Image (cartoon, rainbow, N blue to C red; front, side, top):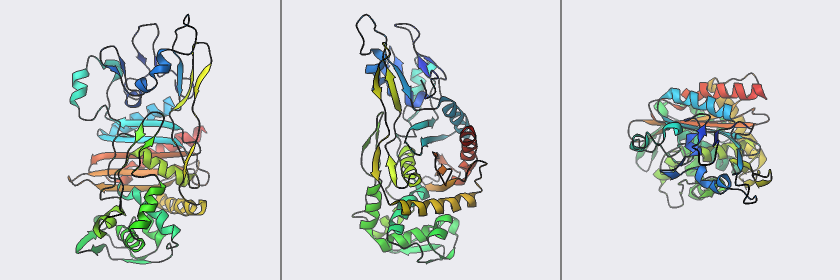
Length: 392
């Protein structure tokens, strides 16, 4: 069931087949329960509760499992994401607790037709893996949130950089997006313009150790076990060359992470530096009505001081204004990213939280292997915030 008690997947009688609220919207995290192909996803992770419960042998009903997911939000987000007709994902977190409210990956498969379409489903590369939490990719400029921590903690926000549109690093000339030049800029201007030159210059001044410490604070490069999966990312600049370090500072290079981990980074900024551990399982109640499992909010890391998080939030508010992001129920804070994949296509990103002054929700979305840029995700996020904040 979802957080409001709406049934998402259920079995009506012993030995019967699974029924679903929607075959596609929930499939990527639910996984499947099949007499032919076994269990996968949370059907496997929580099988011990779903198959049987801690009740007498005369009562062999499995437990009811309640998720943190909001089924209506999940369905709406999935319907909007599939309009892009490509690969992508969307994550919504409760900014205060880390509860996962929506977890969308496209394209996906239809649970209602799993066994009939098994061969066809398995012909589609990666379709059983979630782009939201199992597919770590190059983040592009949304990674400037991490570099911002290092800049601000060294008190460099008011130092200026002369941005001429490119920077030569060890003989290699690296450009801003579209070759734009922004002149003399400080941190806030560099963030709003998403100046690669500014972030490269600052990163090279700070050096490998400072940038590594910033990534370590967000647990990048570490495996992070959650209640339904383990997050993997790649990040290391300890021995990076100047070129590698420069590329890392605007989210290129060898750094990869998932949208769920990017949502954790964004949530930490929204939450005054405190990074919550995301969780999907709210509770399990057995056949006797006894609660046999309970999820809870946990602080995973104190990533930065509250003052530092506030400065990044202010920069994100300015950036959101520059993207034209508006909401009737509270200011949105946001950052876009357009990562070049090396195959002529982009990974388009947008990370955000709202209301900026008292954050309640975090939304992170991406489109993979696209010709689009990050700003094209603005209407999607704007629409979801309008609904979330209006409903209270």
